[in-house]
Length: 140
Image (cartoon, rainbow, N blue to C red):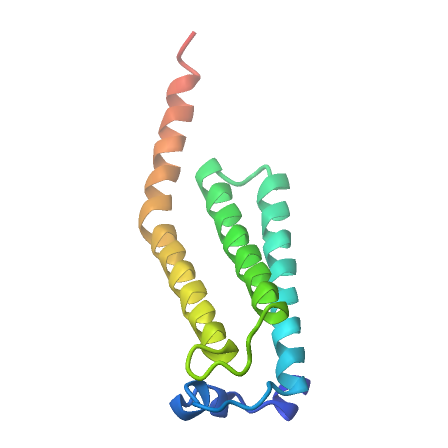
């Protein structure tokens, strides 16, 4: 809420703002939103990785999926920090603004792929693991 008071997200996604030929320096609220967003991604990613590691009731394939989601969020947050601290604001077309949108699209695409895996592959792997567990109790 505090960030939306100082930063206009609708303006950020307009093509004339992203692809400006003479971009102005990024504003302080935008930098703050960028920093907070990257930090939140890293913290949520770490929490998901710890959740998947220490939760014993989860099937192995589901725990692996949660770790992958955590890794995606941590990587996106760290790349966000990297782009924040090593940005070039005055590049005519490929500046810091468009790189953040590219990072956002890549993160959303990867999370979409992971959601597809969760809906299609993970249930099959869970059923296969349960079948193996049932068969193991009969093996010597």
